Length: 396
Image (tube, rainbow, N blue to C red; front, side, top):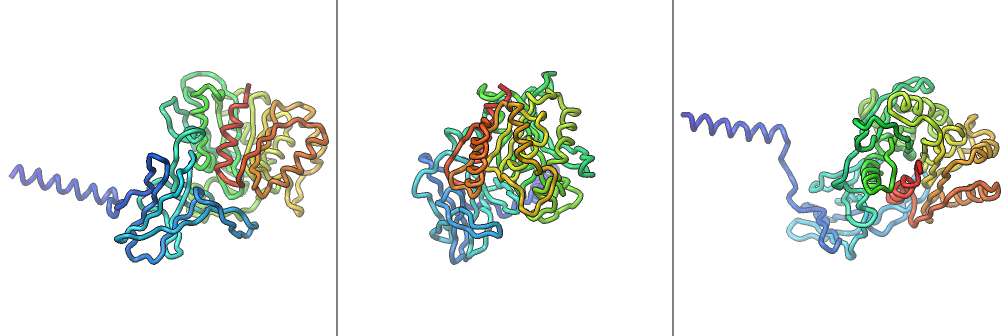
């Protein structure tokens, strides 16, 4: 009887385990498979499919038309079928990088059911994998001391709402008793306070640079630059509202005007070095636009400024005192001699000409800045590179 009871209990535990963990339908093939020579195989079991393709940023780019213009988008490759399993292997080894991809099954975009690693970028969810080596090792979790990433709510009196930040504190912050410099890192249009920590691999990059002695220990504050939002989609009082790039109060001055609320909260809440010499601000695309205009609006707030693939000027119909008197505000900012004004962009970026024109204006005024150019366009690959180049220059 005791054996029967024990066996019954074991069977019950197995049933409960399956029910609780939803283990049905797990991976039936290995995908992606990274081979020793860094070629990669993608596989999908789809016996009834007529055509299966993979699309991702590891493939040659293709032109994609969007409501915002024509851009370079991820390429597409066909998989071949054998016994119901579709497969594609890259013809060449992939260079070290964090890559994203999805499948197209008879025209329907789906994620890889064999790969649990996914990232959301605005309203798109893609699978990801890393080819290690070179700079990409900065994007990996390595055996080094790790910082802490927290989701923190603060009140913005200027915007009249509670809002959320992602805050990275370096390894040892909790027990060191020290004060730290602060780097404010801003996302692009449609992004949110999760973008830099997830797509940008901020914590991994900072952990690794600090451990290597290439960057100073610092606090990194990743804001939500959408002035109409409390927090990322699905993580605010709006519930599971659709993610969108079409948000109110975008690049019209509200976020810039409210930015001192963020700085004041961080200085009250964390052990910070509360002066210009120990503050930096940078951002990508819309975040670069914000960084440019915030830093000139408050010239005594930031000693280090980074523009990553930045939008430069507001729309023609935008009216805000934030954008008035641009040249006078820039003169005041540069007269105060910021320690670093850093501009980076890819040579195929749709904002390349705007950045070229802006640099020409800075040159004509004799304002000092550093310029860093990469290949390719308006992509996260470049922004991770820019972060890994910019952070070691801070607070020296």
